[in-house]
Amino acid sequence: MARSTIDVYICDRCDRVDEIQKTYNSYEWGKATYFQYNGPKHNRHPTTKHNVPEPDICPTCLNELHEWWMKGKAK
Image (cartoon, rainbow, N blue to C red):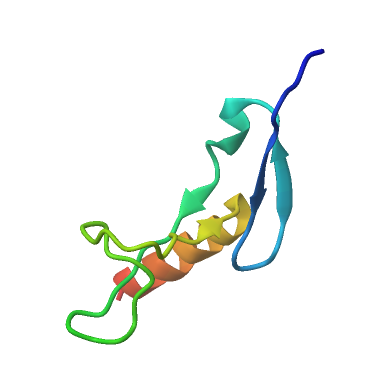
């Protein structure tokens, strides 16, 4: 009997679900990491060792985040 596993990605922002049947299908997905210096707002700093996962972001939400971020840069 053969068995296979298919990864499923779920966007933590919009709840989009994708079955990742080929590795290259996951390349457009992203992870979001943010933190406030000495503050309560964070999801996970890359140097910490605790179990808080980094949110998965689908390609659409990642593009929207990138566009929002770049708008703030151009003043």
